[in-house]
Image (cartoon, rainbow, N blue to C red; front, side, top):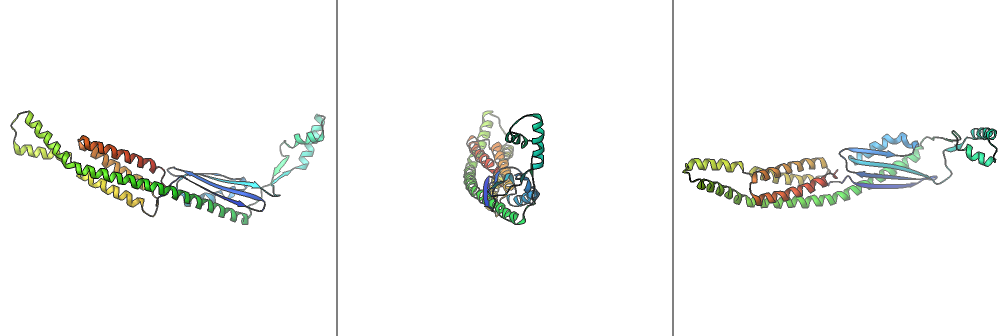
Length: 285
C-alpha cells in the first residue's frame, strides 16, 4: 500500500518537572530533507534522532520539533551573585539610584545570569525516545490514511485510461479504413493509371507507418504494471513515476501516429488523466 509524504504526528510527555511536546510534520520532497529543532541540552542526541526518523519516514521534507516547558522547580539558569554585586557597586559610582533600580540594570548585563548545562538523564531520555517513536507511529498512520485516498484516485484514473484505450482499440479498424479510403481517393483524383500491385505495396507500407498495434499492447501492459506496483507491499513513488513516464510515451506515440481526429480526441483525454496522476504522484512516498 502506498503512503503519502504529507503527514503529522505528535506526542506529549509529562515528566516530574517538565512537559515535553514532540511534533513531526512532513511534505513532499525528492529526498529526505530533515530540519530538527530542540533545546541545546538534547543536541547530543540529534544524530540518533535523525537516524530513527530516516529509517521510518524515508523521504519528504520533515520538520522535527522538541519543546520543553518547565512545570516544576527545575531551572538551569542561575544568578551570578558575585558579578551582580560588582555591577551594582560600579553603577553606584556612576549614578545615584535606588538599589532595586540598579539591580534591574545589573541583571541585564553580561554574565549576570549563567546557564548550567546538565547531562541528559538516561531515564528521562528513554521516555523521550518512546515519545519520539510514538510521534513517528502517528505520522506513519497519517501517511497511510492519505495513501489510501491517493490509491483510490490512481485506481480510478487508471481504470479511465483503460476504458479510453479500449475505445482507441475499437476505433482503430475504422481509422485504418479511413486512411485507405483517403489514399485511394487521392489516386483517383489525379486520374492516373497506376500499377495495382505497386499501389497495394505502397499502401501497406504507408498504413504500417501509422500502425499502433505495438503501442496499444505496451500501453495496456504499463497500465497493468502500474496497478500491480500500486498494490505491492511497499510504497514506491519513484517506481510509479517511472511507469507513468512510459505510459505517457505510448500515449504520445499513439497521438502522433493516429492521423485521425476522433482518436486524437481520445488521446487528449488520456493525457489529461495522466497529468492528474503525475501531479498526485509528487506526494507518494
